[in-house]
Length: 474
Image (cartoon, rainbow, N blue to C red):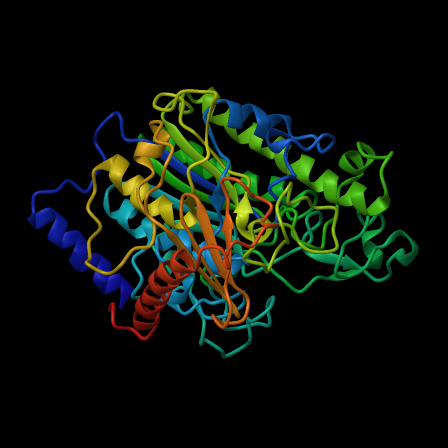
């Protein structure tokens, strides 16, 4: 169905006289990078004083840093759905991790850009559906089960190298047969890199690079490097073919289990074992970010490449991860669960050294990029994101609210205030994020009229999401 939709849509573009090639020399290359469970405070550019992230810090300084950038959800799969579609995950039937899949009827950013001449590639953690119907794989892949089967190539990507869900962040295909529990190692948290791989067991998650095609080579070592080893040739091929590229690189780091290679673990020898693993894998990620940008520079492609970096939610609980000054962590709609580190670098068009406190969210990627490219969204269905073009140019207010739903939690965020419920709307708290970013002072009792107005807007938006989830947008 999606292929038929894409062909009809492409034909309509041609009949309308629209070029299917992005011919303008100003057409930017676009890279969306997402870390996994990276806390707002886990990077140097947000103030961490001992995790070494020099490449991320340099890139952030070269563009605009978002001080109030939100993941659309408090866990991974829903946020990823929002980044691809510009729509809240509840509209798509992806309320939490390992639930639902990217529906064929959804219109993805990859499909739009593919139809406009972009080479499109996906690399890393997919988590928007299963990748096989033939073998047992990861969290949900089962022989004969196509219930949630949804490949990147079914959603607008020319090529991919992907896992369904999490893997260890070093030697991603294996796990040890025993753990040093005295140091805090476990199957859940992570372990030191396995020295004797004869003593290892399969982890149970695979990399796929085509329909039922398992990757079998270059699967040892740092996981971020393995992903970048596939992404960079794709980018270089697009440059050689003089095609603009849209590349998604969704990294596993620092999602548990965290495993750091010996070199990166040794960089943090003065810290606890669990900190060595966590910090080491983030620094390994950082090095690959430097490698990516250096590759773009070597091909004279950095100047007109729009690179967005963010995390899919706040840091996991009971880890050394930092949410900075914010309340709570992953799985919470308080700021620490959804406010994430983020920046945009686009040297030819975004002045270096900027920062903004205007709210932004992963749903904004699609409308922002379409605005930059002067492309229309090809449907009348509701979008939850907005274009950030004015904010990138210096505007310090968003104007439009951001809605959140996760399990029993609801939230409505404006430029100044945040309304939040943790009991499915039975009770509400109100915080002034301009004065109280740590959400310590509940103002609901002092501003009942504001609470009621924001609650009415939130419930109306939720009704819209429910209609979308029921298929009325299609």
